[in-house]
Length: 199
Image 1 (cartoon, rainbow, N blue to C red):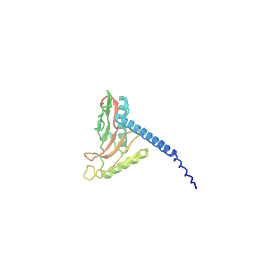
Image 2: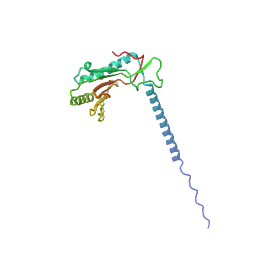
Image 3: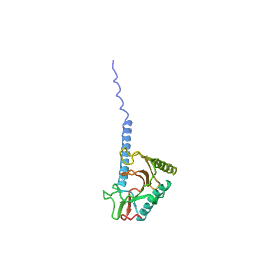
Image 4: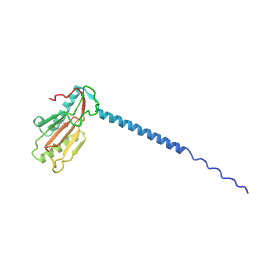
């Protein structure tokens, strides 16, 4: 009796392997696109964003001061009576990598006011007022944790937000003396010209 040899097995369907390679290529391409996008954003961050003209920068200074003064007024206080200082520099706002061209400067304008609250309860009420008013404007409001025991201003939580012009506003204990301080910080800005007098 003759036996018929079993038919040779069919080769496995090559389609799944091709599909797997295609998926791997697509995934690899997507990763490369994301890496390039992240690199481009990182370079823009290092560069510091667009360069304001001197006029635009002066407007930014005005907006920064007005934003803080308006917050002080929300507390029923005359901002001119409690303005503490204006500053144009910050250690983190430097052109350490030489990204800026000739005639371009970086400054971080900020203004601080130091209202004198009669008690801790009055300070807490002021924090609540700002939280309520900023929230009513549709701004995102964040709580600032109180400094740890033993630190200046211990036990006094604060509040902060960023307005629609990108100016950060906060009421919190001062870093060094713990005194309640309302600050308007305009952020690190590149602009034409050099340090200007802030009247």
